[in-house]
Image (cartoon, rainbow over all chains, first blue to last red; front, top):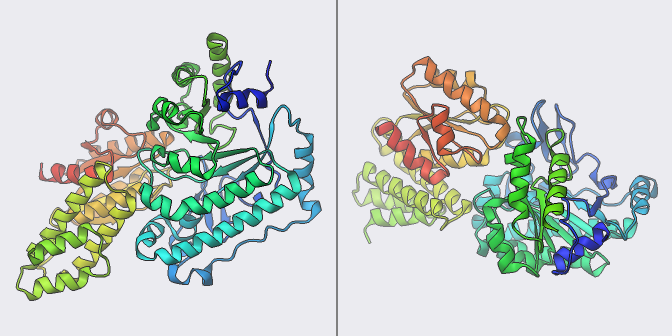
Length: 325
Length: 209
């Protein structure tokens, strides 16, 4: 039997996997990294993160959202330098200790030690200035947007260096949502103009420094951006929703990139979920194919919003592995 | 190209820095403010259709809406009464339990561009707040409910029911990722739209009914 890591490599290299990769099983995500302190609020609380972006997680809601209006960090994009202060990426060995211990405990033959990054370059732009202001600024103030993006990219590179120095990750799991369920936010031309080169720099840096696998989370439609994902160096697009026509993507791009998702969280992860719904959706996903595809909830972590759903998906994938391998 | 056509083209192209001057030129040339406004409403119709067809993306829609808004600012002193909102008032918001606002904001802009006066209730709006806003604001013809989360769909249903049971003469339109035409009909909404472009078309159809 292949290890989780070996099986994943067979899937993405077009080899001979002996079962489906089961969601996030191949990634051991190091959530203890000191940069992540304060990234997630507790339910029922609100406050600023290290960049000054104000978040709120109302009681009973399933997640946190940035709040703008009076809290917006960048009040005028032409003066962004006045408003934006990047947090420090330097932490003491003591602050790194838990992350290092976790990374050292991982059997790297079995799993990839994985460094997460939440709120990538595009998300950072609109978190700092609100979505509407950011999207308008791409047209009205492109030079300032390029400058802001360069600044965020430099931060990401500094973050990457610290992560590599301390935990030597085999994989990164990087979040940046680029669309709605129906389309990308930006046209492919605009996306290319602003984000291709910065991401080539960031993902290239990780790869040049021992990271074998780049997993990018984007739970939206982004099929029109896949050629750029490949050029950036993304190995696995996680969060790939069914609206992307996954079978067609596999046929067109399999071998250059793999797709992880196909089980839309919104469809199975809700208070009234049941095993029947889960099994129906998992079966659909597994029929997309055994290569270049990893059946998974589209959720951006190895959890579900409602208790039991993630585990039920795992079980349903096991059943499909028995049936199809 | 006539000045009215030029105004329409500038809105479609989102020429936010030039539109005010062009609208002023159209006025100076003797065009009626109502006709200039109509050319901008027509432009937003084109933008909505192109967005629905996937030909343009959110930034293009946003700058067109901004251009229209800047053009309307120039026209306002020349318009009789409240004719910038010829279709009446629309109360819009994201339903209780849901903090997503991008889709709702886009729909609000498109509806404003179509000729509605907008009362934006924001996000996480309770059924009671929607009902009160529909009662308390002037000339409310439409209530638009947005929801992105499967988990908040029951709140959408509750809101539709509360408004319908109140007997107010308003139409209710719903939209958002988990919502479908069938679901809209099932919960008693008058209309459904899959995106901001078609929301404007559907909203106009509902109130002109």
